[in-house]
Image (cartoon, rainbow, N blue to C red):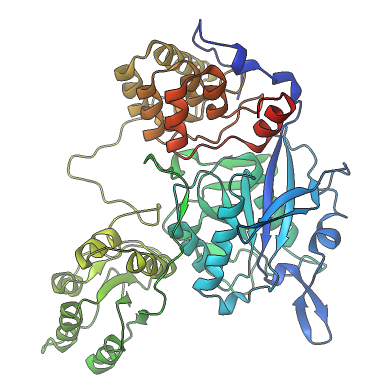
Amino acid sequence: MSSLSVAPDQPQQNLNSNMAAIQHPESRVLIIMTGGTICMKESPHGLVPATGFMDEAMMPRPSFNDGSICEPLPVIINDKTTEYRPSLRTPISKYSRHVRYALYEFPILLDSSSISSAGWTQIAACIQSNYALYDGFVILHGTDSLAYTASALSFMISALGKPVILTGSQASIFALQSDAVDNLLGALIIAGTFLIPEVCLFFHRTLYRGNRTTKISATAFDAFGSPNCEALARVSGIGIDVNWSLIHRATALERFNVQFALDTAHVACLRIFPGITPALLDSVLKVPGLHGLILETFGAGNAPSGPDGAFIDVIKAAIGRGIVIVSVSQCRSGTVSPLYEPATILGNAGVVFGHDLTTEAALTKLFFLLALPGLSYAEIVRQMSIPLRGEMTALPSKHQFAHLPLLGLGASLSSEQVRFTELGYAIAAGELDKIKTMLDTESHVLLLARDYAENTALHLAAVSGEVEVVRELLRRGASVHERNAAGNTPLGLADKAGRLQNAALLREAGALLHVEEKERAELDGEA
């Protein structure tokens, strides 16, 4: 972003320190290879997983390797052992940034068609162990269950502040005609360039919210879709266009955390079809130990009712036994709602409307909620009906209305400069009410804006703002992991400026010193 003014009389020595030290900043990304077609080679017995992926598939390609000599990067294995893995660096992107990356390959590669909660736990544990060491994560995965894994990880990980991007390919990276290079490079560049704090899926030049995706083709390169949510970003010949207004940000003051337990053994999925009998439904609902059922219904949530009401009686009996039943649509797009009488009857029986959840998201969300300790039946039903990670469209309240943005797509840069400068003055003066008013109308614009030294509003507040100003910015979704031109995080600036309350609050919200800040501190004798 072009130069923006900042509030006067604020401490500049910390904001600008080391600014000249990083001519072309590096971000660090860990590639986690779980398996999939992308890493396979031809053999006499068909495609088989290949070792040496970085050496054979990435090092020879100039788009993945600028030829520089890179030191190995640490990778923490099993939360105990630290191994130093070879690293490569991409050429400078049009965003004036290198992406330096290491690759960790699972000792036993996962078959995506056989993946279970154990595989999801293995992936999440690897992210958790290395969260403080890397700016983003790219997960290579088979396409068969890619949308399920993306959905599961989105619920397992809470207070995520860094990009986690899953990708794979329809053809091996070693094949003559393949989508693998574009998918891997796109995911790598986005993970190392844009601080999108979501579990995402990247395929065919498009970044999706992971828990909104579904596989739509077994063979086409355009294999995934997000029918009820626009793409988060698209890659074109002129760059990467991020739809920042859609990005889901954690607003609670909590640290990154992973919930490993998932109840996958006690949930079923049943697709309604013409002629389905109450007896068949009853047999599914009486599977020993069943706790939940995802019911794929017709259209907007319709299911057979019949004059005798036997179908509904089976459902009522199951709900009476404490089984959570969630209705999602069989249709590729649209939502489940009480639009028609059959859907209303289901709702009156106690079936949860899944709105525009995909089947993948509905299943993994129910796996997640059923495993949470202490949740009552009523609370599980309530949380299945509301968005937790952007997996469904929030229903507007009766009094909700949309503000017209003050800065449209055609707004001039000077308008943004003026508004960010005004926000900077308000932060320096501690004018909390004014800050709230400004953020009410253009929050996502102002939280992404930067000054001439690449400081965000949270950087400014960390060194010169009152603690309640920092709290308000965090509540609005300001990222604690953004770095300025000197490579400093808001936490690093708060520590240097002696803003102890601000630093404590940032840590409470999950802030970590970037690994480069720690390295500089060691060189300066501060560690």
